[in-house]
Length: 294
Image 1 (spheres, helix red, strand yellow):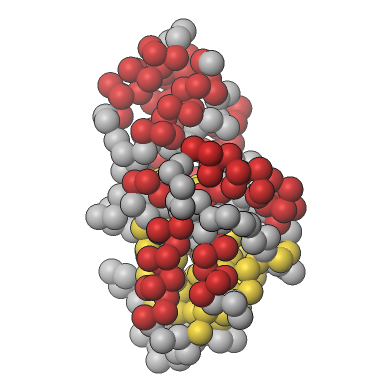
Image 2: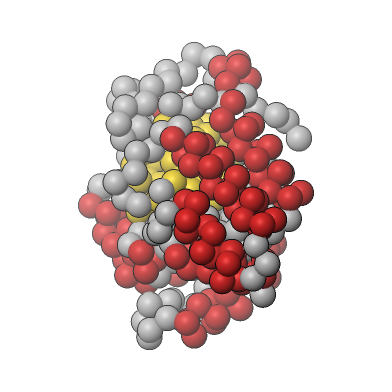
């Protein structure tokens, strides 16, 4: 796998202006110019979708979970007056793709895609995930159908002739995640490699080996040195910057220590709250505790 760092990107994107303001807004009048973040409410898992805009077209990264949040996102997209060309799904977890059914009703000409390492997992699991989620939420909160994204050819996305780099696949809160780096804006869309100011989904990271692999990939992403870092989950007021890496290190340290030092699910949950505080995303903690201690 090609290891990407800041120097590699400068070489790959020589001649491209790379600036990032508070909202990851570039200076060029054409091509990739902005990356704006839409954050779900707590019922929608505090998941981030990222709207990357050019002069006339847009690309969306991740499609939300619940119908109300996907509808609000669709309204935001429509208000831009630009054409939604591509919807990229970063990984197979349902909170990042079940909203596709809502978005495709509003934007039928958009092309939903996922990396070749991700698309088969979505295709095989999406309906079961939808059904399970629908059973856990009030009626109308989860879409009645699923949309399976097409398989992306290669490791890049294009918007108005400009290239966005698909990284990975990497192990994060699940085994296969594909973050996106936007060199024109010096912006990393980290997806669920990074959470900030919330609990983490740790249900798939209950051993030291898996936690260590997540740490290694975080270090590689941090080495990019991106000025803007957009996590997969956060509270809406959280800054999109490198603070996410510190949050991840502290949380994974706490999780690994608590796993080793507690024997029961109740003790593990209490230990985590004592170590990291009563953060949003309680469901993530509960599922991690159940996976680790039964």
